[in-house]
Image (cartoon, rainbow, N blue to C red):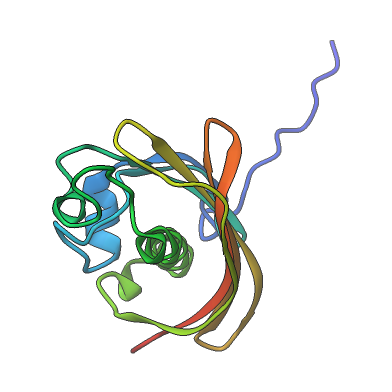
Length: 162
């Protein structure tokens, strides 16, 4: 019986795909906390390339008290912030533990579009994809979807601070 040679990844490289990242690991990676932590988990993480953040939008979100009490709508700028938090977590997971808790600052937000309101009961699936990286500056394209339908999108860049 012929045996195929086993293929192994070099141990220093580690995995390049992560199925799911829970909120505890997200909080190790980025410094955001309630009420400003806007992602609950991440799935389908391709280190150095892309990830999907998940935000379960609840009626108990603090921003709904004023935006708007009669018709709760998640502010579009917070959807873009959720994109940035997903991207920042991806960056830290890619770069490793030495970068955990580092601050990541927006540099640009381009072509932001808001296609429909997001409200209580919606689950945002925030798809981010790296467009490029130079030194400590990363540029991403983000698309937020509810039930597969695009609700917001933006291109943004951020810098991770040492």
